Length: 510
Image (cartoon, rainbow, N blue to C red; front, side, top):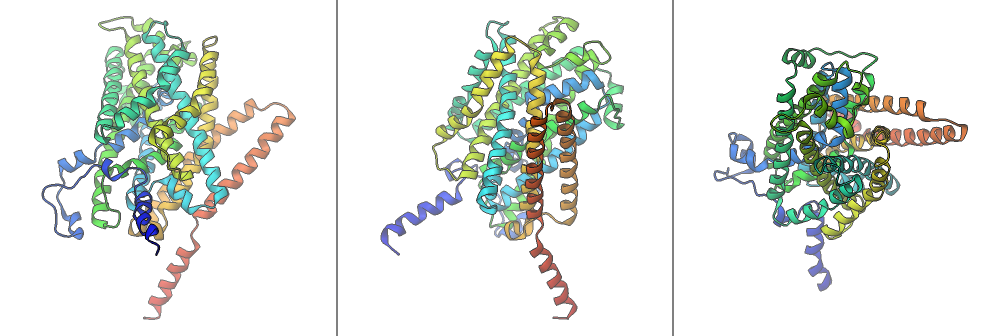
C-alpha cells in the first residue's frame, strides 16, 4: 500500500463510521458499576441514571407529534367530533410509537440511520426518488410549522408583526440551532425539554380554564366511535401522527449515544432504555394533544362555528368565549403554538441535515447543510404568508394540500424501514421476528390505507378537466408502481431459501 494511502485510510474509515454524530459529540452512557463482559450487560439491574443519560432522542422525536399541523387536526377533531375521536388519538399514538421504536432499533443495531441505509441498499434511481420524496415531505411539514410560528408571533405582537415577518423570524431559528449545537447534544435536548414543558403548561392551563367534562373524556378514550360526519377528522388525526421525516430522524437521533453496534449486550441495553424513553415521550405528547382536543370539544362542539375553526382564528374564538381571566387565553394559546412551531422547525432542520447527507453522502459543514435545508422551505412559505395576509381562509386550503403532500410520502418511509429492519444480513439477531413483522406491516398497511382514502377523496373533489385527470392518472400509476417495487424489494427470497435449507438439513439428521 502506498504511504499516502496508509495515512488517508484512517480518515476515510472515521468518516464512514461517524455519520450522524462525531465521536466528540456523543453522550457516554457507561455507568460506574459495569460488567466484565458484554454478555453480562443484559443482566444489569434497571438504572435511573442510565435512563436519564439515554433520555433525549425520544423527546426530540415526539416534537413531530406536537407540531402545528397536529394541533390543527386535534382542535378541528374536538370542535367537529367532540370527545368521540379520543380513542383514535390514543391508538394512533400507539401506532406511531411502534414505527418510531423500529426506527430506533434500526439506528442502534446498525450504527447508521435510515437515509444512509437507503443509499446503500437501493439502486441509484430508487435512492434518488426516495430522497426527493423525503425532501417534499419535509418541505410540506416545514411550511406548516413555520406558518404556525408566524401566526403565534402575530398574535403575541397584537398584529404589529405580519405573517411574513414571523416567517423570517422563524426561518432564522436554524442559526439558533447551530448555536445550541456547539454546546453539546445534552444542552440542545434541554432546550427542547423547555419547549415541550411550555406546551404542556400552556395547554394544561387552557384545559383548566375551559374545564372539559371528565366523564365524557374518559368515555371518549375507552369507547370507539366513528360516524360518516367525522370520518374526515378521523383520517386527519391518524394522518398527522406518522410523519415521514420523523421516521428518518429518530434512526439518527439514537446515535447521539456512544453505543458500539458490534456489542450485542450494549445494543440490547440501549434498545431497552430507548423503548422506555420513547414511550414516556409519546405519552406526554398524547396528553398534550388530549388537552387541545378536549378544550375545543368543550368550547365549540355542536356550535355553528365548529367547522370554521383553524389555527388562524382558534385563539380569538377562545378569547371571545372565555375572555381574559388572570392571563388572556388568547396569549396562552399563542405561547403554546409558538413553542410547538419553533421546536418543530428546529427538529425539521435537524431531520433535513440527516436526510440530505444520508441520501447524497454529502460531506458539508453543519452550518451549510442547515442553511440549505432551511432555504428549501422559505420561498414557498413566504409566498403562502403573503397570501394569508389578504385571506385567512386560505389556511384550510393550504393545510389540505400539505396533508395530501405528506400522505403521499408515507410509503416511502415506512416500507424501506420495515424492509431494512427485517434483513438478517443487516440487523443480525436484532431483525424483527415474524410476529412483530406481521404487526408492523398491518399497522403500515392501515396507515397507508387511511392516507390513501384521504388522497382519493381529495383528488375526486379537486380534479377538474380532462388534461388534469390524465396527469393525475399517470402520476397515480407511477406512484403505485414504485410502491409495488418497494414492497417487492422487501420480500427476501433468500431468507425463505435459508429457512427451507435449515429444515431440510434438520430433517436429514445432519
